[in-house]
Image 1 (tube, rainbow, N blue to C red):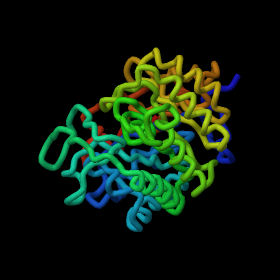
Image 2 (image 1 turned 180 degrees about the horizontal axis):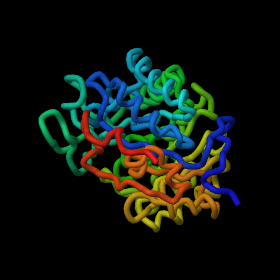
Image 3 (image 1 turned 90 degrees about the vertical axis):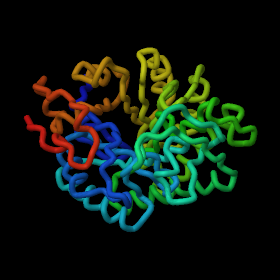
Length: 354
């Protein structure tokens, strides 16, 4: 029987186990989008994960949606990330960069003067984002032109090349949780009538072309995609997600990607997860729907074949040596949300290890 503690081949990259660290926004980069020495310490402490997927990294200036998030679009950012990846590799870890363009999620106050958030359509999300002046409502984004869509796809490819230059083992495109790729997939945020919207084929086109561009830039074996079918986060509405996501996976499966990462937000999402798992021939990673932080009981999802790799989020924050604790059956530190964000938050790196 395969267990979560067995190694797995990820398109030629050997992972020591099948326990992944899920991407989690930290908002601890500098104002210029540079990861710091604390970032390197944070990820290196968690290098026993079979695979680390970083916090979301904006592929361009306009792709930033939260304060103090890191980028991969300048030479300085590449150099700063190299210090992180070198440290993780020295500790025996594997690390993918998550490329996250937030689209309509954000605020002009977080962008250079004169820029406005962009999206498939000029439809505002409901809610607020934290800015230097405090929480502010999301604004109505500017609809991307065809030329700008092509430029955005090129930004993803350029950021992927930068990630490889920075020493990452690969990249995961963030197509989940209501950010730009997801906004193109969802009918309520993509109201276009041109070739980038309308039908299922139109709505999946941006995701397909972005993934293909990245795969051509760095190789499909270094390229992955994260999806969250039916996830209502950030004002997304997908009442019937299965046709869209099966069409998307069918279009991408022949590329030979490193993996597909599915995020569940409700137990009912397992139905779509199961369909995508069967249709995708590569490695499948699952962030399962759970009542509270994902716990040791989710290891069984590898054993029963629901997924190839299981992703843990909050528990990795509280337990840097999580794979060892899972193997031993505990003890586990409880996640403390008061330490999740902020430059010098207590508990960021200093939880006791097993």
